[in-house]
Image: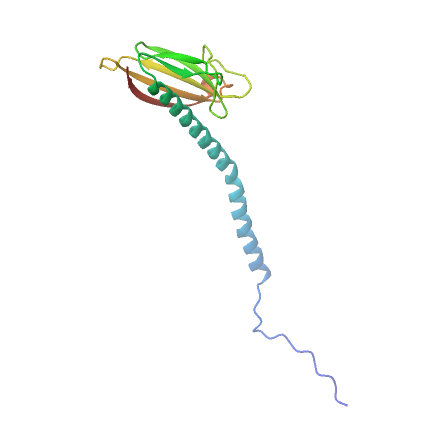
Length: 167
């Protein structure tokens, strides 16, 4: 009888990754994952700021549209869902306040820019009229939307929008 054949020896042509190569690849991937996870809070804050800026622009657009739809020197702006309005006088300097909810609807008409803790109020709007434009029957109307309304005035983020309106 013939002796059994020796087991085959592995040839040098077999391709595989060494342990060092695998560890380097895992290290590079983990570094990238940590960097991506570290950027998530920044991305979430940026997205939230963008949503607040968009809401402020929508609220302002609504206020300007209501003011432009009116005629005469006193223009109505809705102050609640019941159809109550506030008159904005375009012929004299003045400031008016409106409190807006999350969906941009007017919640109330506060007397000052003090923090508002009413439920559902997210934004505080300041409507300022200035008649010092140098042209008769033309007023500068500035709408400043600040948020969050419950924060002190110095801690709020403000978006200001300006237009000229004739009367």
